[in-house]
Length: 153
Image (cartoon, rainbow, N blue to C red; front, side, top):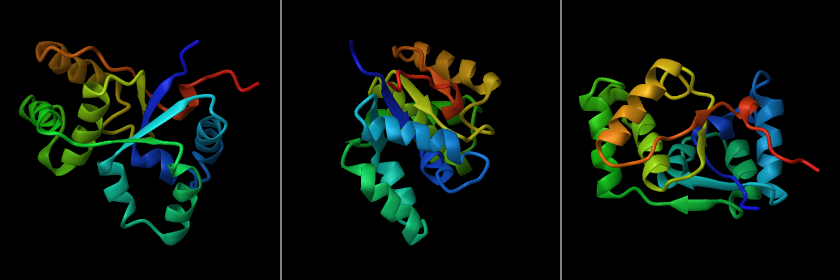
């Protein structure tokens, strides 16, 4: 059976250190460490972590080798710009648009985030997917870590 391929945005990594999100973030990361699921991040995630506290970077290093790192291409930037042009997200949050575009273009099974304002947002998800379909891409499944279940045995 094919393992789930999950794109993690930076909020999931930060969630490891947030009391509200810690338990579910750890469960997801343990699934990656244990080889139950395949984790994907982008160079955007890596860049955003450069400004993170050292303890966050250190934790990321413990499982980062298990992650597939994808590059941001011109195709991805153009798709992200379409999300902005359609007023789904503003230019100020271009990084969030890039996360969605990366997950879409690389055709991961789902994107996982704790960002409820800009990413895991019912009204926005359908609009992101309308842009995706209009531009010849598949719909993207977007969930919070608490919604992602996998065989933990």
